Length: 252
Image (cartoon, rainbow, N blue to C red; front, side, top):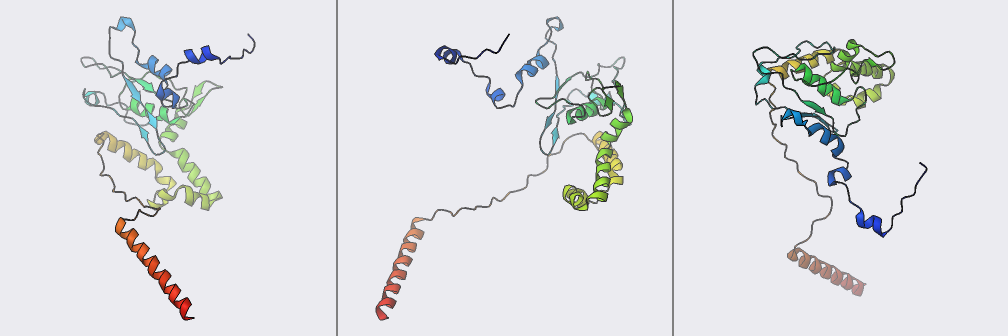
């Protein structure tokens, strides 16, 4: 079929239906959302859960609720190997909690951060259907997965290598890009140990604690409006200044 020009006449605009607001704003992909929440009829309204991962400029946000107490039954994989891990249900206990990755509008390319969140959730004991094709270390040509490369990414060794490269090649760029690392005395050799401590701290107490919000004082750049008394006073000052100028002119 060749190119067909869309005729936007009166009938077109009368029948035109806009997309949902959040789709127009580029916030929600309803095509993907429908397929994530819809349940097969032969499952008889069994709840279907999503693990929602959202990436901001500062954080990667996932929220997991421990209301079922599954974290005490399924410990997951404690040692970080980077290899594929799938939790197995324990006899005599509730089955492993199954959910599905909701990547939102993120580009699901190999090595995307949403798959890092997926790997963390799977190692934590969740049952999420996945493959290794989108993890760092997968070679699409040879169809092989290198778990060691994946482990290096989990432990921040790719960042450590880049830090070492900048330290040798461009020290100014290193100071600019890793200023907070320098401020907190974090060196490339400390990266792996730092992540190990973070993983241990999360396992010890995974409950998020809200920090007190900093009170932000907004600066005002424009001049605030004057009150009536200030306006009258300003007029009086102008009059007095004008009269003084007139007197000086008369004297001279």
